Length: 248
Image (cartoon, rainbow, N blue to C red; front, side):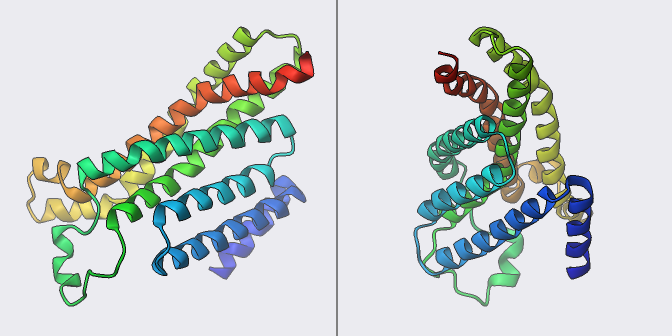
């Protein structure tokens, strides 16, 4: 682990120069913040409140520490924050309806000797995991769209709001496909071994597709993709809004 961490640091410095140190530091800071959040939740703090504060800190460190252009950073941060809040509002009822939180039947043998009355809401923990899983893709999409639009403005500062918005949508169309593939492959890779186990046990396809664990991860995948899609037009609109005072 230490060897891989050292290789990561060396590659960041070689590729990004001294900015690589900032990226590495922000990564380490985010890791510490996540561990702290887990300790707070395990200690009895409200998971949804911790999720909100954690999202705010992670977005701030990931965006402002690694984005030099002020307009890009401001637009990406506000956009990501709005999208995360919107997802959080909608995830709560969806999670309640889907009821995919907690343990699957396959876990019964491993946990039968343990008590589940630990004072934590598995539904809220599931919501927290979905939000954390979506943060990176949302922030990445927003930064990419905002950076592209800022580059366009450097060549044509007089471009109108409608044209700039259309340009943002055009940039976003290319990013959405890549982000979806990233989320999908992450989902598929995480549960490849479990799916193979189900197949070896002779589970019918209908049971595998409707399994509690896979449905829960599929829900997280769809929510992440919806967040990415919503990020594109919102980023384009907010960048237009934030640049108005400078133009006027």
